[in-house]
Image (tube, rainbow, N blue to C red):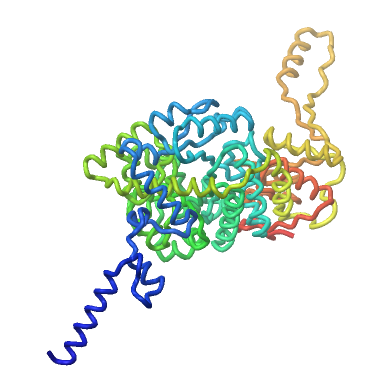
Amino acid sequence: MPARLLVSVVAVLALVAGCTGDEANPPAGAGPEATEQAAPPSPSERLGLGIGWGPTRAELDRAARRVGRLRLPELAGQLIVTRYAGTRAPTELVRRLHLGGVVVFDENVAGPEELAGALRRLQRGAGRGWPLMTAVDQEGGLVQRVGGAVTAYPALMSAGAAGDRALTRRAHRALGAELNVIGLNVDLAPVADVTVGSADPVIGSRSPGSDPVVVATHAVAAAHGLRDAGVVPVVKHFPGHGSLTTDSHVALPVQTRTVRQLERVDLAPFRAAVDAGLPAVMVGHIAVRAVDPGVPATLSRPVVHGLLRERLGFDGLVVSDALEMAAVRSRREPAVRFLRAGGDVVLMPTDPATARASIVRAVRDGRLPRRRLEQAATRMVALLEHRAATAGRGAAPGSAAEAARTLSAEAVTVVAGPCGGRLVEGPVVPLGSSMAVAGFRAAATRAGMSLGRVDLVKPPKPKRTGNKKKDRRRLRAWRRTEPRTVIRGTPVHLVGPGGAAPGAGIVVATDRPWVLGTSAAPVRIATYGATPGAMRALVDVLAGRARAPGRLPVDVRGVDRRGC
């Protein structure tokens, strides 16, 4: 045998011996790496699941073993999280369909203690060896689904206006602590959409701003704060809803940007979230023309698996936006299509029983592999168990009030009028929605600010002339006369969603700041919320007791400056 051939054979034999050696007794000189390579894949590795987004490998493996023992109908139900009616624990519904969890709305809240009790009974009565997902959509601003049970927060745009990442994290840690103590373990927030401005009808002040860096910074900080408090954050709405002009609650929006444009703007905050190791992402009902034309992102494998899983490298939990929304509810088998696309949690289908049946049927027909269901359920169960093992006890409802007020105080933005001293003299008269006015009046009273009033004034009743016919005619005319509104003080116009801004007095945008550009009022202010904390911060600025440090995180046409 030639010498070179003999050397090759020896080398091959040595390699084979190294690959087939005993794992318990590796050959001399073999390091831990050699042993690791020889180890068989664990249960979660066999499912192709990665780590680095929350659960440990051991937690994923434990979840994979549990999930693998579920019967198919149970496995299908585990992936569904639904809404429910009433304030009582929906234990029978959850047990009957083996649902993975529920989403709580205002209609389910009789009070914080009542909600906490109902969720405790639900967790105990579900008969599961792992936690149920008890989720809520608690963003702040216009989207606060349990507003009567926890501290009201301003919109997330307040974080962009304040510009303090540490403050954003602290504020959301305080919010998360309240959610945690009630028994809510998942918040379907924060929003990571980059808004285009006034043409954006859906996101608006729900976004931190129009700069991808600002949005990424504060969405990630808010998510970290929630996670610090033991609540799973769900960053949304991938691949970005802020640049669209159609509301996916009523129709299917179409994203016309190229993938390169999406990478620069819309996807940037989600990439930051993935890089930060955040655990969950919600996919929105958005058709991405450059990737999968005409198909909602929730139902698109090129978007969910291609963009989110492969391009951004996300291994964590993928949650659908509500499947009851108009953009997808008329589509055939949306739950099945979402799972085939690479999603995990089927959120709020129109009918959970129908959704579960469609998933079971798809597996039995061979259109959806059981392995895909096990991947999804393993991620879900492992994340909820990881959260349960690491979460603290939370904090009492109302304990976040000062954190919410501080966030608003740092966000108040004066785009017209003096930057220091009193902005108003004499009594003030708040005008706007009943909630905003009540909040302002309470804050003003607390601060000792003088409140004026609104009078309805009619001309004096006509005196009798002795001519009965003439007197009756004059009296009828007087009765038909509409009273004049007389404002006894400086008007403070609290302009909320859809409201118009007058051109006089003090104009305050309590939601979307773009309305300030439509007014010529001498004093114009953005508070990004009408919460008690926001109204206290506003009163302090009007009275000259505090400066307004916030700056507009979006472009507003018609204003001369972004802040003081």
